[in-house]
Image 1 (tube, rainbow over the protein chains, first blue to last red):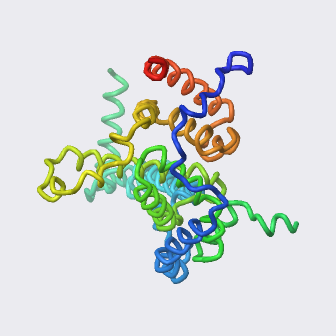
Image 2 (image 1 turned 180 degrees about the vertical axis):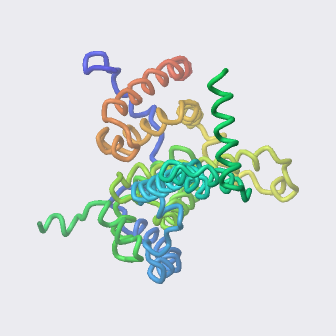
Length: 142
Length: 195
C-alpha cells in the first residue's frame, strides 16, 4: 500500500488524455442524455408498475428469502416420518395376538390343551396334558 | 431531514424503482449518469460508444432491479453492469476491426479517419492512450476516473466497491507504469523539438 511519502508525482498534464466525458456543468449535453434515457426507460418502468417486485419473485427467490422456515418445516416433516417408521417397526415386533392369549391361558389356568389350540389343533385335554408331561419329563432326564 | 428528502439514499430509491417509481429512477440516473459515462470511457474510445454503453447500462439495471437487494450498495452493482456492457461493446468493436475492409470503407475519404492519426503533434497523445489502455482493467478504470475525469479517490472507491486505499494503490501503480512506458517517448519528443 503506497504512503504519502512514496506516492509518485501526478503525471504531467500533457501526458493525460482529454476526458471523453463532458463536464458536469454541460447542462445541455446531460439533459439530452437524460431525455434519451427516460424515453427508453418508460416502457420498462410501466412494466414494473404493473408487476411490482413482490409479485415478480419466483419460487426460488421466495425460497432464498424464506429458507429458514422452509428448512425448519422440512426438518419437522423428516422427524415425523422417522418417528412413524420407528413406531411401526416397534409395533410389528410385538407377539401375535393369538399366541399371547394361549400363553396367558397356560399361565392363568394351567390348561395344556390351550397350547395346541394356539397352534390351530383341536386337542383332547387329557392327551394334551400327557403329551406335555412326557415332554417335560424327557427334558428333565436330559 | 430535509437533506434526506432532497438526497434520498440509493437503497430507498432502488426500492421505489422496484415498484416502478419513475421519479426515483430519474434521481438515481442523474446521480450516476456521468460516473457511468466515465466508466464506459475507460473502455471505449468513441464518444457515441460511450453514450450508448451508458444508456444500455441503465436500461439493463432497470430490467434487473427486481433482483437487486436494496440493503446492499447500489453503486458497485451498477458499476459491474457498466463494466460488463462496456467490455462486450469493446469485444464487438475488436471483432469488427479484424473483419476485412469493405468496399464502402475503402471508398471513404481520408478525412473520415480518426483525427488523432496523422495529425502533427498528436502521435504522443495516441501513444499515451495506448499505454493507458494497456493497464490492467481496475488500475486503468481507477486511474481514468481519478486522474482524467477528476473524481476523488473516495468517490471512485464507492463506485467501484473498493476501499479508498485500494483505489489509491491502483492510481499509484498506474502512474508508475505509465511513467515507465512513456518516459522514452517524451525524451524522443524533446530531442526532436531541440533538433
